[in-house]
Image 1 (cartoon, rainbow over the protein chains, first blue to last red):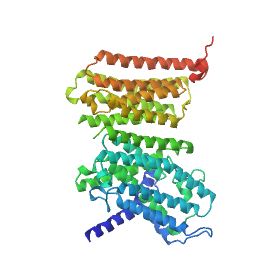
Image 2: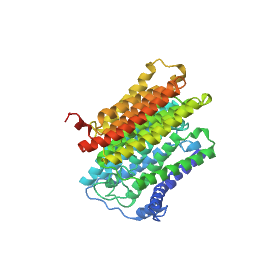
Image 3: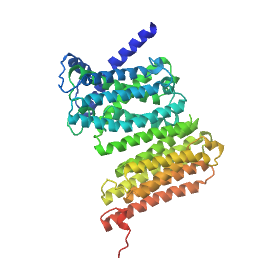
Image 4: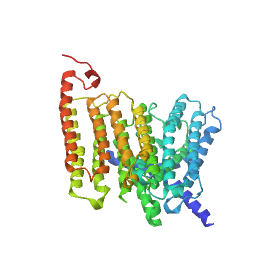
Length: 301
Length: 215
């Protein structure tokens, strides 16, 4: 009974807190630019508005057009359930859960790309192709980071992997994971979440034909993914296991806030990279994580 | 205890090697090179805190000031004086040079265990870090066409040699350390002048044009 209540609380946390992060990023961007910016809770209003609206369905689209976003959202929420939250641990924790986490993220990506191609628009097919071709590199970096953590702690369970500090490779791992976070969530050096210019979009292209509740689900899923990667980065780098439960919660909140503000600052101060430069940056991120793996292997604690 | 911090800094230096290989602009190459110099300058202070004497502190401070401030300033001044474009012109593309550097680093980490090291150095990554920096310097020297980027490659190579020299920090005389630092600074100073001359004579800093002799 208690664990069921804990599960519900955790679900509520992920559902309710996640849309806050894009709001904070937008606030930081507005603050740097000297504007007032949209309210921090803007995404909540958007989600509520989209949820009340109707859906426009293409006559060409199969049921996969609606099922894709739904499956992707469920996969992302399930991945979120595996992610430990400081001292509270994960809702589910078993040996090898980190592999399930990575595969759930891949499933979510597959479903989004699938739904994007349902309407038969060449433009959305192009966006899907871009998304998955960058994912090849960013997933390699994520795998290297996970391997580094696994070798450092001698475990393949997220709770034990994320509790100590990442050792000698911590700085490299932080740099690599931050770049992966930016790439996976389509933030600025890779993709501009504000633009609707056809040639520059990656993620936005794929969701152009969605409307109403499916679009709301996609947007919410994207914010959950952002929170998931932020938590992964913070817990991989900070020594969570050494703190008391209140201290861990505080450190986690401060870390998430710090990473979110850093994303906002990157977005304000950097320009989008040209497409041909993106693989270079992603390769650098992969090598950062690979070097962290080397350090974990040879450097010890 | 200090071994952990030391390895963290060596990891940072390895990451900066990657940034140097991947950067397409001269200022960012100079920045990562000088930051690496500062990181390396910090290391002698952290290596054996209980055996710290004024010689080690002097070497560390001189290294940080020289590599972090003086040399980048000289290079930036040369860059402004020669009025060159900031874009690098690589012989080797950025991704191939990154992969080469990464392969070299992996080989360095894997092979360093085969070397007969003193037991107190076996746990640190000093030797792999040194070899990795030297390889990065070589790749930059071979793979970039601009004279200033080749100077940066040479400086990263020197960083690697300095890292290697840290193994012997208590045995090498202060004179030797300061002599090397002075040589490097004067070398960069002279290169700054040469770069200006090359620019005037050839209207370009592309070293490919320097292969034929002319009257």
